Image (cartoon, rainbow, N blue to C red; front, side, top):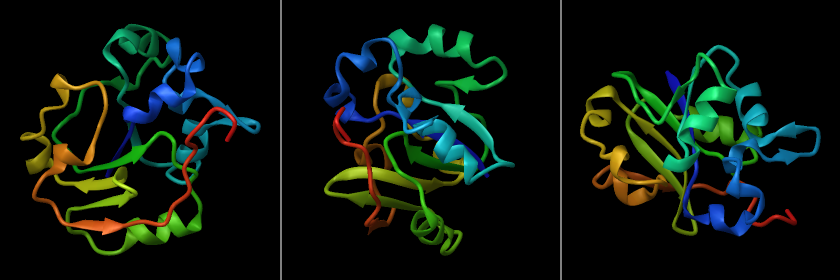
Length: 151
């Protein structure tokens, strides 16, 4: 499975820090949010999804990593604001079927097959929202996220 770390509409809560960085590249403690996520998936391929105007910068800073481009593969989308812990790993590890995980109408994660990836219109948006995965079963997820600069 491939990991896609994405930004959502709450990126504005981190202004002005997110003017020049995706939210998942903000430092939280000693590591970036992205590094904390990838620590739990050491062998997975990674794709980064960011706002269009940051795309060239993110590509330049991350050679060898796909940016805003999905291949024909199964994906685990993970919100770049998620604080991953063992609870997250247990939650998404249940079953192999497609499913989206939300908390307070915010997309936390989504397990998506290659067939569905072909149908998703990610090129037309700067943020990944639950509405992109319409028709896929939804489950509530009690997972912590960073919501504001002071978090």
